[in-house]
Length: 81
Image (tube, rainbow, N blue to C red; front, side, top):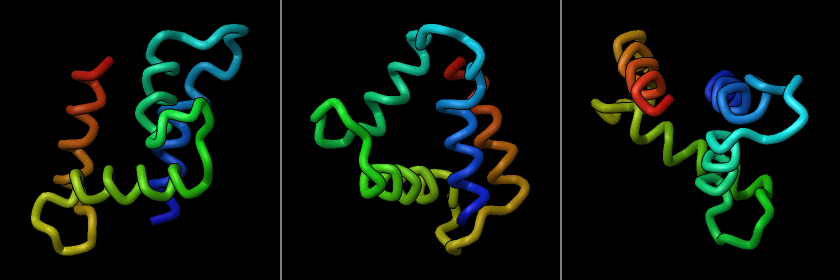
């Protein structure tokens, strides 16, 4: 579960850490994670977002993510870019 959090954190925030301004993609990710739309992302919202994303990736609902499911996630991320 920890690696999933790290992957999502990387995809949302660290991929363009050298940029001085946030891209529209980063703002969109932030807004998605800001579940109560208060303009902030709390640790509860991060955990809720991770759980939602985990459930979406875990296609067979076995509480584990397989390489096949991870490959599917990669395809989805590439489509969203």
